Image (cartoon, rainbow, N blue to C red; front, top):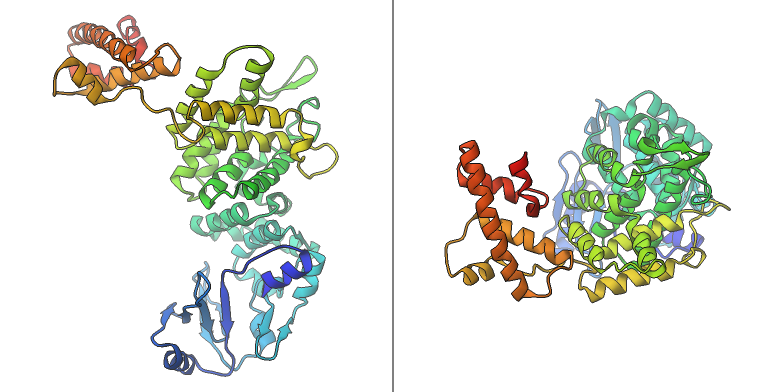
Length: 500
């Protein structure tokens, strides 16, 4: 009901996925009997309070059918509720247990009546988040985070009354009891469903959530930036614009949930290295090395949530190189330096963590668009100088190298080397050769497979000499030395082990 009213009043094309049906005047047992008589066996979920799942035909999710219920807080935590069904409740009384007014709307399809006990429809017209009942709201502190994600989800403002109450709940530490999983779920909804994530993040700041629970984001507030590059202001303002740009880009590119999480989280955390690196030098603000410096605070931020491992890996791979796209374009187009090999190496580095050049180009776009000095809305693509130029250049270059959405294919595999040597017995030494030859390939020093095989044999000869020398010097097994070589960031520099 909420989504239908919002679509009508706010010109948003929301498509309801969940359908909750509340039936009045019937006991749970009678309701179930009627449904089974008409539709066959139905599924029931919930221990203390049953929700009947009925297949909905044309929709992905089943109908959730239940009778009105009463929630009584009897203990701390989100499980500390005594929940009982009560078919004698009227619609207003049942609606009062909803957290915010826009969620309290109900519609009777038989008499085509909208029930709006708490002015939810009016609040939708005003674009306002308001609560139904202060006492009920405070029974579950998660509702503070629900306010955050609903504000972002629909681009609504939070009323002063609600903000004041949420600020009080945060200050009193009521959110301390929330589990990591529940917090994560609300933040994910903000990221995945938010049409304007900055609204939710700004509410989190005003309510004290950022200061109390998310120090990596709190550190961004009031960190200055050089006006020449960031006329929008401090790092926090830039970050809010950047995540809104990322949300728009995710919609445009029709990203799935996983990629949307990756892009928006990368945008949220891309400048977390600036508080560690920002200095005033010669009267100008400089943040040299902030890209790589963002890895540690981003990792700490992720420790607070149960996010998908692959999303975290991709974000941590993208952040240290978020300035590379425009820099590479400038190097080749304006300075005449061929960047083919650099792009290949970059794709390889990203690919090892599941990220790719395409996603990096979107992050860099969001970063560039988050620089509007006139208001808090991110710039349009057309307003960013050279955006079309460097982004198209990067994607075309990556496509020619076949690395737009994946790492470069290996020039050799283990079978190639075994056949060249004439043996069927492999070993850890093959990994050393493959890694070294692949790095040469990424550097552009090999013209093809034949040359790569010859180079592999050269490396084998070199590595064997190094392994034998170190094995004798330190009385270690050859395998132990091979493991040291293969674990080097660049095995081509294995001779440095002799000097160390």
